[in-house]
Length: 570
Image (cartoon, rainbow, N blue to C red):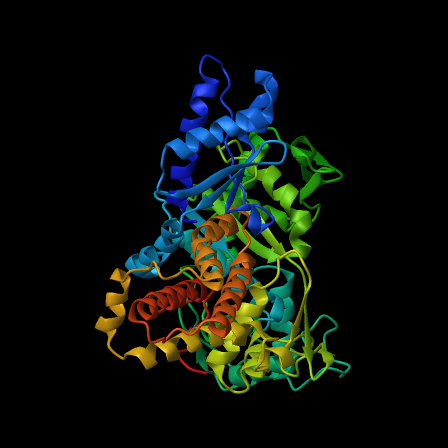
């Protein structure tokens, strides 16, 4: 049922209940539910049981009075209303009301399901944010799929969304990267006595060293081109070249994955622009810090943390959550009333201290800022065995590996499989990515299952006509022939799409889009097996064509949200 139809039925029930509540101070919340058993109707309401006790009346008698009042309204949305059990009211919606979703979809097309809750609100979604020390691994891929889909859900509600990539381009790991490339440039390799213990061992380090020695020029998103000096003793040049080189590699991976960012933010800029020092000064001025054992501490226990945290160590360096606090202060100052971070579950320990720091600076940042979506690990299976390493990365499976394997050489197919699979489970659950399933042309493969539903519709529509004008005319056909059981199920699933999008955003759970698409594809396949579309009876044929055209539109809308293509043929 469409949202406006639900609101209209709620108003009808409120009107029916009003005489019973007259002269009382009761103001109950009327809720509509879907009966567990479809044979009980389309809508269930327990308002009579809610008000029976305070009114000291029999709930069944109240329910019957409400039913009588509803039927007396002759509401075009309500086919029947009846009393059930101890006082439930079960409603059946008219066939015309159910069929209305088809016209709505065909009129609104790619706008169907979109809302207005986010108008005037700015939100920044930070995701992937990989250290520029190696290729993107499958965990980054899960972040990419989740973050991009979540951003699309926000945009569907008219939020002004900024997709942001935060580069940790400062710290110990960058120093290790430079030493690794320097060692390779000097001719050493993993296993040699001269090889640094903390070095990165992947083949990509050798590739960077080779390009550094021949003085190549590289560039990355939002950055100036960097030319290598070729001097193996020039650590600063090695560091700068290596970071830019890997940022460019990550750009290539993200392009193959179909993920684009609006902004790249460098951790190093927080130091060079004085943002870290400013954040620390604000915390000191707020009286939320103290010195102990030569270190500077933040009173995070005042904000729910289990213990206070060191901000500045005795050697003068900051702990890793301090620049995070500074970064989120900057987000707030940039006008983002909401910030969402998509990160690995290993970041769980930083949530309390970052939020504590943001509260302590007294800048009006709300509690619970930022929101976090934490994801668990991805296990990759291929040829029936777990894949733990990539030759190129040295210690993990890369996003590029996964796209290549899952597409069988077809980048688009691989991208579709990886993106769909990586959002198809709740973020906080571990996920097994089976490459063999991603390649399967069967119902076992959810991407194939959904793609086949879309292609099946395209084939039926092409059999009817290749005229876009003829298809556009279907939005005006008579839908009254749509009375079969499988048609009713498909209509209901189509009407659930806008509400599903709202719920998915409310719960920051884009996996619900993948669930819905799989269910909608299932309804389409069941309908196809139960009913012929291109029948001889013209009114029935046109109504059914309109129904499957609407279904195709919703499949396209949902697939677009999660960055997956909608092929016309398989």
